[in-house]
Image (cartoon, rainbow, N blue to C red):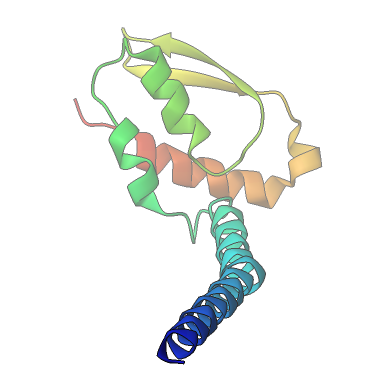
Amino acid sequence: MKQVNVMRYKNMLIVGLLVIGFGLFAVVQGVIIPQNEQRHQQYLAAQQNPVTHDLSRILPFKNRYMGDASNVANLFQHLPLDVERTYRLHPETWSVEVNYKEGVSRIGEERVHKILTWISQVTSHKK
């Protein structure tokens, strides 16, 4: 009789742990992951606005070495205005020419002006 009670207790414990496990799995899949994804999407949307842009994302790419084209490309890729572009380095004047493939009229003149002003301030270096 004792052995039957022990087996019943073990079976109930296993079933209870399974119920808890499935419950936690449902909470993670149904609540936590969607909330994290929503926060991540809001964060990415905020990165397209110069006022709410997280500068810590671009600091690793800020570099005084002009010859690092991939670093320059990564810097601009992490700045607001996610538009296809090409780059041209001018080391003699210590500048980067960025040619955006979208027209100002499609993006919005005021938005482009704010973003480009912000980008020029963030990416400028003193010699």
